[in-house]
Length: 315
Length: 315
Image (cartoon, rainbow over all chains, first blue to last red; front, side, top):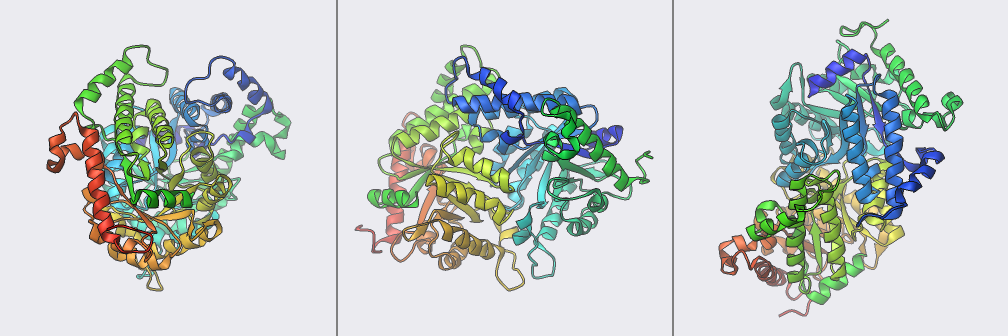
């Protein structure tokens, strides 16, 4: 699966993933209004009316964003929490979003951050990566429980040609509390986790990269430089660009000398672009066009950071 | 919410939680057969037939187990992965299970192990603890992202009188890989996490205990003894009894001198008891009675470990 992602990145010349994290405050009023119609008929069991409406709005919003960006970006990353908060209808909207994005040729990274002990991790892996329930191409995984919490995901990745991105150094302000703590030998916890990711990934190579990738926040370029060396065959998913403060300059060190090795996520910076001054000319009605414009700007920005490296015939 | 849990533990003289982790291999054939009927009519959109059948079997199994144990145990802990693996019908079965257990007077601990950055953690917290979608009494939370990943859960707990159990030292064999690593000052990572749990919990006290609890595996009594001292007001959820190898003797140090402070989980040791020699006389048809017998034996076993401590008028 990692090669499928790389091919798409190279074809579109865009190491960019659009985060589909549709906070209701991002969704234009006209979509929210229209979504009321979804609750006119019978409300299914175990679905609250307000969740049915919210889920419909999320789905319509995602569909329009997806249509607007699917020809220029290789991948999307729906954040399942934003769907799960709306219960059963929310999970249906998640599933519809995943399926729709795949039908548009996009690679789908399910940002689920699951992780548990053996048989439970395997249930998560089968539920999200085995094509029998939710069916994303990559899932994010939390490593706190160690090898026997992660290997069931690796096993399912091998069986179904899927991939995972394991949290190593997250983009949020307090990520250092546990991740940056120095251990006895002078390394930080995130380095120890990175070493394990490399080890887990060695069982799941596909070409120069592994189907076991790592999440490294775009907001932490120093740690990323260390991890880039430590995990030479590990593809990095880098959240935190834009709204969380990271710039293209911060991201240069996330990429390999060949210009590959990382994909950068932006969520609200793209999907809620119409709310920013720079894209306000599109207005609320033009939210999807604004998202496309913001995605193009982000792609141009990142191309600047990796211009001249081997795989890119850019500029 | 922690006081409600404690009252129920004391009333039933049972610091025991039954893990509702219905692996399909635990479910008797006659239930699986009967569940086929659920797929006779139209299959709803976004639900595969085999998931509809599995979810129906899980629900019927859970209902029978719940009926059999609800008067003798204070709480249940459904493991959401076991439901999520069956997609939308699985999540409906999770919700039905949670609601049914609450209707039977049980405290429900949703073993969801969620955790993300700020606004995303808040979406998870609202989705599971705010009464608008899934609605458990306690949720388990993964601390790897640090304070700003956990505090949104604490905020929602305060607002809705709910609780969380934060993973500190998990019960699985590889939990030591990151959790036991010694940091610069000689403490282990799990101690650092425990210190933070105490700090987060100080904002959310209810009587002598906090609504922010900790998960500490019953399989690690030495680490538990350290954590018990480090987190005097933190209630411990201890998985790993029985099938994972921990005994009542291992658990003595999890409880405070007053006999409170911990609740011990057993999943397959109870719900799949009919498959063990000790309870085979109940047969497959008597799986729920076997579960009740195994729960009674576990309660007796644990009472032995805390006999004589203040709150227990036992023996």
